[in-house]
Image (tube, rainbow, N blue to C red; front, top):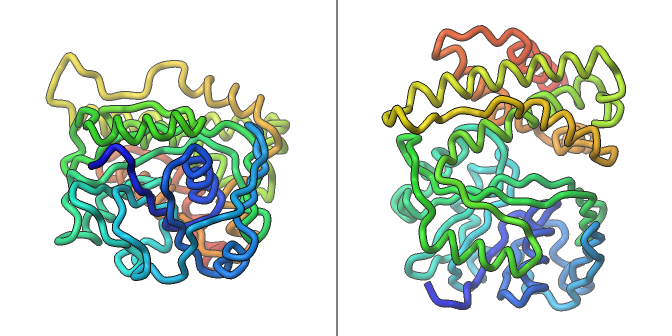
Length: 324
């Protein structure tokens, strides 16, 4: 990979649009694949309202057809997991040593991408970034970044094992740092995904079932207690899963004590936020139920663990989705 990395953004929405725009603002060569916003962005560029400073990209490398995109070093996948089956048709060509970087929530996402790209992208060239960000797409080519923005970057391992940061990961991290995006490297992507689920499962799921923002949920004592109970189920499942995969007795693959309180405290300080799943529900789009809730519930069942609150939330969301 050359010193000047060329990026492609697949899914120019709240996440892909924000991070791609930041990379271009910092001087990286970025190419954006768009659908309904293509003509608008070609004419007027990308607008980012951000807690870290507003800016507009007046010149954007925009495409409606992935086959027209040039070979790139990093393909950033920012589609919803419900659209992943489309990804092979949306993949631009990769340069030698190029990687796919998923910015998606949920469990089992990396393995599904590896399966879809089997034969064209080696598993060791699949990376994942977990985004801790409050960002919404509020109009065509218009992103509103409300808070946070940190990325936790890890490398996919087919067996769920530990995998140290690669040189490519370090180069990508440098690009994001220069783009004013906080980024941290992890050698345990699996536990990192579970850590993200500690927040995503209760807040995304309950925001739809209860028709509420994060602030409204946290202001209700009963709901706050329910959120804490669901988080405890997620942590227990994550730690059991990590223990099952642990081969080194000195390396404890678990979520640390106090993490639940940290997540609750962080959400208390967060601006009122409509979660991504709630936005999808309000806009009539498919929900990421299987990646965010279905897969973790099945993981718990596989280990014989009871997760009644997670399971109830999963069934409620499935019912609402079927009913619609």
